[in-house]
Length: 198
Ligand SMILES: CC(C)(COP(=O)(O)OP(=O)(O)OC[C@H]1O[C@@H](n2cnc3c(N)ncnc32)[C@H](O)[C@@H]1OP(=O)(O)O)[C@@H](O)C(=O)NCCC(=O)NCCS
Image (cartoon, rainbow, N blue to C red; front, side, top):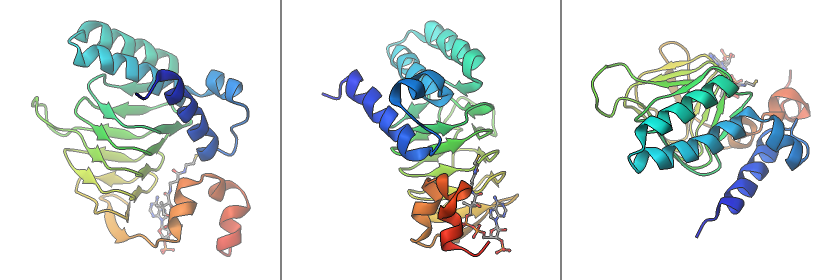
């Protein structure tokens, strides 16, 4: 059985792996809004699926007030989910998120219709969504794909692709990019410069 303590340890390790600014676990547990949001969501989701929908919504709303991250308690989120920076994130009720997914600030996983159907995106394992990106509708972002900062995505993205722009266009992802895309260090320090002339 996957215990709560193991899950918290895994989340803390995940934060260290995804953010070069992360330091000790105690500090990270206190300062990372993304961790607070996912821990709160797991409680809210458990309440939601057991039929305690009112308390689940209230908990999600309090978390939104405290973190700036709005996750509907009905959303299904896998393990090792990480939100860097937090703030301005919206994840809709019927969104489904696999394992090892990472979102930056300002991401919306939203709907385009007002019907009570599956209307939010599915993000398969290992997807990275850049800051400010809007992923809209019951579309699927394939495993290992990345959505560029500020993209607006309304159509499926195949596995291991990159989608950028408005409306987003897909291109296959070079396997060498995998490390760079999941490691924000690459955008900040020598990782990027080591691979590319900038
Ligand atoms: C989309 C992304 C994943 C592509 O990374 P990449 O494959 O290494 O792409 P490159 O940097 O080599 O750029 C390839 C081309 O796409 C363009 N491009 C890159 N990111 C783009 C974006 N978000 N929107 C539009 N075009 C973009 C580049 O200008 C370049 O164009 P060119 O071929 O005409 O020169 C990355 O640029 C990105 O947006 N990551 C999100 C990072 C983020 O949100 N960081 C927040 C930290 S706080």
